Image 1 (cartoon, rainbow, N blue to C red):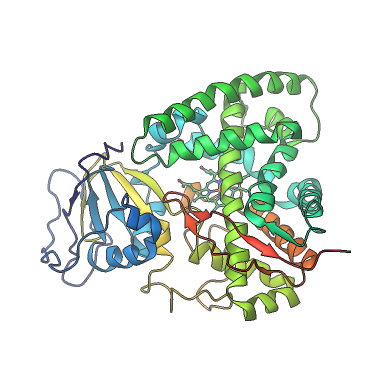
Image 2 (tube, helix red, strand yellow):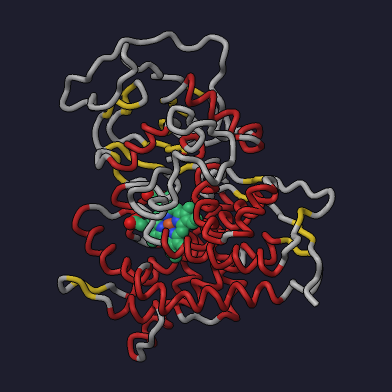
Amino acid sequence: MPGDLAGARLLITAQPRDDLGRTEGLRCRGPGPVRLPRRAVPVNREAPDILSPEFAADPYAAYRVLRDDFPLLYHEATRSYVLSRYDDVERAFKDPVFTTDNYDWQLEPVHGRTILQMSGREHAVRRALVAPAFRGTTLEQQFLPVIERNARQLIDEFRASGGADLVAQFATRFPVNVIVDMLGLDRADHERFHRWYTAIIGFLGNLAQDPHVAEAGLRTREEFAAYLLPVIRERRDNLGDDLLSTLCAAEIDGTRMSDEDIKAFCSLLLTAGGETTDKAISSLVHNLLRHPEQLAAVRADHSLIAPAFAETLRYTPPVHMIMRQAAEDVVIGGGKVPAGSTVTCLIGAAGRDERRYADPDTFDIRRGDLSADTAFSAAAAHLSFALGRHFCVGALLAKAEVEVGVARLLEAMPDMALAPGAEPREQGVFTRGLDALPVEFTPAG
Ligand code: HEM
């Protein structure tokens, strides 16, 4: 669990790879740990601190130092082992020796027990219960119209004005409105949902253990339960064609979800599906505004929105780090992670790994090493939805939201440009996105 920020210190315990640079297949089993030849700790580079203000301002420079010189770093303040290379983060997502037990303390206090912390059959059954709602005909026939309607409604509020902050007026509202409508909840409660998900995300990323942030997260759990449990009970008696009704009625192998299960899952949906897609949309539009030739190509051919989304997930991912817990001693990143340790997987660093991507610091929607055909499936060539058993169950929903949302924005604002003097900045360490995205355009007549 994260420790106290006061007195934060970095300890470099293990960076070396073996002489051939290999780490794969060297997992420790039993009492005899595998010993690797040690390489000297680099003398002229200091290990970046993932909790420092410099890191928050620009993590990308630090990611390079981590990948090159500290592929496995013990970070004392968070008491976790930090992985930054693509291959290592990919393995941490796919190899079952890295469990999601970390969510017992990271998320359960605010959501209750969710699918994220489950494993084995329990996870498989739960996932099979919820997954059909987020793909195929249910997504296309039931939820695509909801996505279209919400995109148009939000854009109609500002299209005649000639200017808008696309973070405040579109991105932070669109995915949450979509989920609220999908669940069949009251749109009038939007502000409450927004406040709750902001508090939950704060709790998740509270690496420095700020007590106020922790308290706000815990309060949210009670408030959300008091709000949703009566709605669930009522919905069980009056099933409709919304997602909440689907969750109430879903059954696999005789297993159904309890009221508490459904409440926890809906709470997870608000954050997992709200804040992530929100940050992805504004980052995507910003990346295109900074690359006018690619923006023109996407305007001319909306089928390029999906590749632009995939490239945004690699280049400026909404989730920069997620954690895992080692079930046993594991050799990875050139050193040993002891059983029971927390592992911090730097998705943001992996996406810029030059061992995996050509010219990784360049935003290029046509890059050959990241295909949009697989980017929204478990065969993805990026790590921003994770990989393996917990691969984002909402990836296709996110794709649909981004495709519709960005297409409607581009249509409504054919000459959209960054407002003069605007310098959108990324903020956040755990999840990361723009503080604002002020644009101007010719008002619709
Ligand atoms: C750009 C948008 C999104 C990003 C970057 C994203 C990212 C992720 C990541 C990284 C994970 C894996 C977490 C882990 O393994 O520890 C995940 C899982 C999950 N996501 Fe997403 N997500 C997005 C959109 C959505 C949407 C729209 C929904 C649904 C409304 C959603 C629901 C979920 C759920 C329920 C899980 C847990 C799956 C499981 O444990 O089996 N996500 N997401």
